[in-house]
Structure formats: structure tokens, C-alpha cells
Image 1 (cartoon, rainbow, N blue to C red):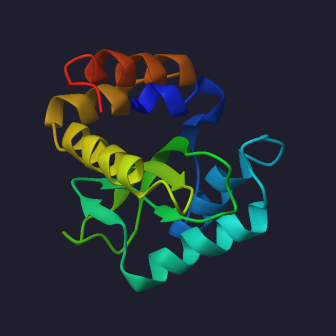
Image 2: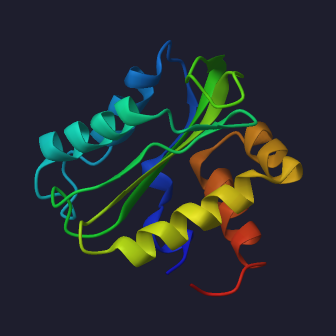
Length: 156
């Protein structure tokens, strides 16, 4: 499974003006309001916010990956947002975040969920990749950047 199999331009917010991590997480989850892959949006929201309480998913270098596993989804879902101003995400490196990738998987899809988290983290660890995302102006351009980067990785 590839990131671009679960991420689509309509689930990407190319320029978002938010003030808190809860606001961006909630807005990313709201993108899935009428998505057939969602069994219960409230359960999805609760799972992601509860996971965030355990430990911040702000992994560093201006990037966060809020995620959860829940039966509130029927399949793995993903969303992405770029903020116009960096926000405090209580990141591990103490730096603010402006790139946020939401990943929610079904409880029994642990393997694919972990592999996707790993791939996203590897991609986001590349300075050049993050710079391309920061410079992108549209959802379609962001999707294309993910697609091009992912071609360098072995299928998972």
C-alpha cells in the first residue's frame, strides 16, 4: 500500500490558517464527514485526540503525524494540511509545526498502519521534500510531490 493510494487531493488543505493543534486535527478529520470509509466520525475524532494526549505526534522538523487505530473507519484514511503560520504542536524537538499528516487505520490493520507511518516519517525527514511541500500552492501540487517522492520507495 502506498501513501498516494489513501491520500487524495480533496483530503489536502494546501494553506490553512489555524492557531492550535486541536483545531488542525479537527479540521483534517472533518474532511472525512461524508466519506464512505468512515463508520463513525466521532469515534475517529476521539481516537486521534486520545492518542495525542498520550504523547504529541509532533515528531520534529516542523512536521506532525497525528494518528490512531480505530474501528470508526472501514479502511485506512489519510489527510494532509500545511499551515500558513507554524503552530505549537508540543513537538519532540520543541519547534512549531506547519506540515501535518493525519493517518487513521482500522484496529485489525496494524501492519499496514505501521508501515505507512514509517514511510511518511522517512519522507518527512528529508529536508528537500519538506521544502517542496512548503513551497506548494495547491492540493494537486502537494499530491504530486507525495507521488513523485513515493516512487523512490519499495512497495509496502
